[in-house]
Image (cartoon, rainbow, N blue to C red; front, side):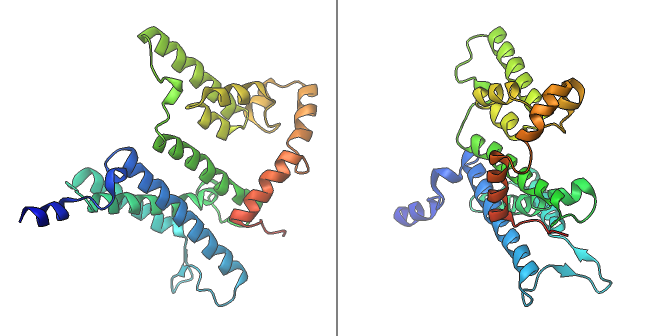
Length: 246
């Protein structure tokens, strides 16, 4: 029955689900959907009395969803290495890993601060981490070449390009411009922009290298009432919810 065999041999996910950037697309899609879903659930738990919320043991221990996320990533990672997976199980594993990553990074601020700061001001770190991770993953899925090396001409030229681009990204990170640093690894012009601009006054770069006049100029640029910062906070509040006022 060659016709029937051909039907069952068809990959229902098509070329986008093949190992590589296609599977990465499934990871990114699952990551975005799971982050939005779990963040929405958390916001409903915060504002709606009848929403079931999280899981709590009889002893009063609250199991944060990063626990489930870590377990899902560990399971998916182990299966990806240990099991000879084929479609559709390879795709299912990719989705499970993406969901786990979404759950885990949604509570990034908790595992960095080692305390529950989900709705505190420090909780914004979770949204920032999600944005950075999504930008990196999206650039990989789109097939963007790291360090801008679309057609490396020589070993020496490639080495110089890697050093320059990596150096610019490191400067961005030291200045507190992490998103520009990550994007700059793939699109160097963003690294140049972040490296030449004033850094955050609380960044390591500013504390070590800025004189008093530079700190005075950087302060208003990153103040809460600065137009760019207000715009970023509004987007973060819209997607992730505003921090508690108390």
